[in-house]
Amino acid sequence: MQPYFSEHFGNASSIHHHGQETRAAVERARESVAALLGCRSSEIVFTSGGTEGDNLAIFGLVKPGDHVISSTIEHHAVLNSCKRLQSLGCEVTFVPVDGRGLVDPGDVRRALRPNTKLVTIMMANNETGVLQAAEEIGKIAAEADVYFHSDAVQAAGKVSIDVKRIGCDLLSISGHKMHAPQGTGALCVGKGTNLQPMLYGGSHERSRRAGTENVPGIVGLGKAAEIAKAALDRGELSRMSEMRDRIEQKILDTVEATGINGQGPARVPNTTNIYFDGIEGEALVIALDLKGLAVSTGAACSSGAIEPSHVLTAMGLPAERARASIRFSLGKQNTPGEVESALDLIPGTVARLRELSPVYHASSK
Ligand SMILES: Cc1ncc(COP(=O)(O)O)c(C=O)c1O
Image 1: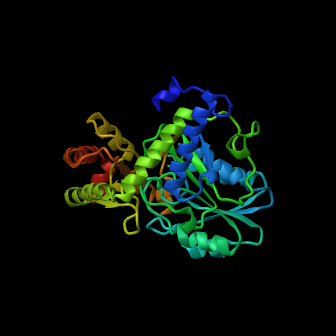
Image 2: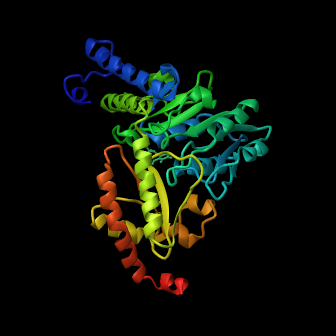
């Protein structure tokens, strides 16, 4: 990326040689992202991230009076876009998930209406890592002649994606989930998809996203896509799922009253979501952070009250268990040694928090 902050500074839309240099770099990046997703480079629209891609897919297609099918476990980039659609006079059906976090494709079929315009269902959930039956859902949408968008922010670079096989008309990804810079991303827009832009201005990105391109960011996204594809092709991610499995097995073996949220279905290799009954997930996140281990909850803190994760409650977890859940995410630089160090910290930290918990002692008596 560095040369594109300094010596290669041309505007990629300029016809002089500085512009042509950066244009070539943008187009090389487009080819790398297309290769990762199995689409044509002309189908890639560079965005500022997953949120923009999701919004562009949804608001670019749906008009008042249309019906949309989504799910209860979407990221807020989709969930809140769908809620906005409702306030604009669109109908939205949020199909449920089962206890493992899976959408039943039959529910998608049953939700179809004559005015259904779009099915938007994520590929991998950001809290549990659970992968949906995207291909089956894509087939149902195609048979009904309905557009299918998938938020693949958590899936890109973690599992191989082929938009043609999935039958996906639109698919969004975000750079920072695959080691590209924050604030970068792409939306794949299948040929023939009648998408209206959200931003009006110049004819950048084939008139689908106006505005001067973020050349260094796009170059970074392209390189990250190239590296991710090579790692997927070489089967390197099995190392990550082995570390994920080790975390799960050790925690379940050594810490009582724990369990995995979303166990059973196929998942991305880097994510696990584990409940520790009797504690507040936020407290565990803070306690582990103080010891140098960065984990997270799916919980959103709104107006001082910690809301349990909408994903975990949609899976049927009671609010206390959802609040007692934390997500561990691995990156490709993590090592088995780091996993062992993390595992050494967890049982003692959980035990100390449980000692302080009147709820845990009352319920375990
Ligand atoms: C599944 C999913 N969709 C969308 C987004 C939003 O992406 P961005 O932060 O790049 O806008 C995220 C971010 O974490 C995500 O996990």
